[in-house]
Amino acid sequence: MVDLTKSLAETLVKDIMNNSLISADSATTVFQIANLMAKGGIGAIIVKKDNIPAGMITDRDFAIKITTQKLPLDTPIDKVASYPLTTINLNETILVAASMMSSKKLRKLAVVENEKVIGIITSTDLVNQLALAKDNP
Image 1 (spheres, rainbow, N blue to C red):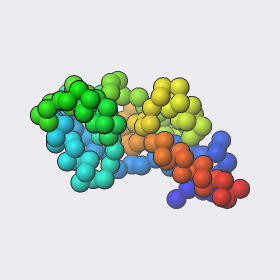
Image 2: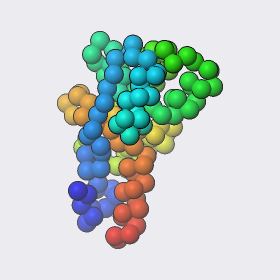
Image 3: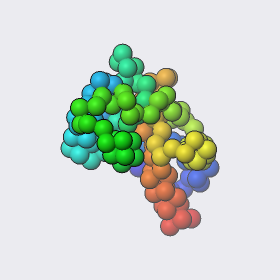
Image 4: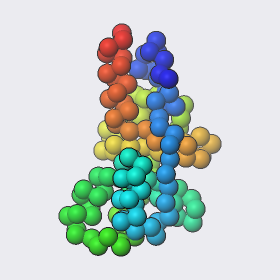
């Protein structure tokens, strides 16, 4: 639960991140990923190479890369995922996360603790936190 007494500058990534993670091997097909996203109601999946988190495939990759290039559904996600995986430490503030997302034009960051991916923070998470802060000054 988010502590509404914290200011935005004090709110940490770990306070609002989503720790439900799905990952897939880079050889997984875009069709399989689309099914995982649909069943899980999620918009991003961590892509692993040699069992190490290396990138991310998002719903935006489907909208932009896959459809505009008319790629077949058996295309491995390795061809369309975003590399390298952009990460943020769980103890960074959400203002740092927002700045990273803005400067790198990203909507999602993988959250790490001791170099291990433990969650995802999204631009929607940041907007929701901003709305909570506005409603509870």
